[in-house]
Image (cartoon, rainbow, N blue to C red; front, side, top):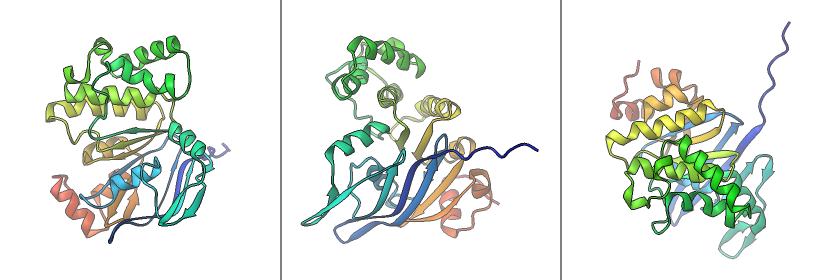
Length: 264
């Protein structure tokens, strides 16, 4: 009798995450675990808390309550007037280096070439040798299909090329987890496929990925789990194909109908 396959360790664990902006409670007790090698697609209507959730994972936003653990290390907090903050700035920098973030708007430095964008953090944040970082950056740019653009500036690239450069930049930090915040929503329709193809290749490599997206077919075909957020809470969490074919929630059914994805 074969022994059961070992369960991969947790890459990210979030418990009872809460976040408020003024009177608006954006996250209302979100708990989610992603294991190493798992791809989690996060769907939800505008304002459901998806982007805020990702920004809390990368500590770009500080949650008002709840716990975050990345690669086995829990974020430490301290209270101060007006709320809590991370207790250790060094820990924040360390955890951010483990969590690569790809934004909707690319966020490339316009005054630096593509290659310079990719090597900036490895050289100046991680303190690695420039020659080593350049060699790795060139390999990453080849991986995402824009090696010939390495000496161009972002303004010379299409939106799809800029987003692929942003993916290479995130990968250059050797992250344990990749976060994607609607990475195709700012792209022209003809450019969406080239970015999704890169993301699918990363998933096939076994990378841990949390992806906020409206690309429902991509989520169905690539993700291991689909999470549907509604008004700051997880409404559904399950296998993508099953969840899309037979959603339990009327809200998810309505969301999928708006995305023109057929459901049972």
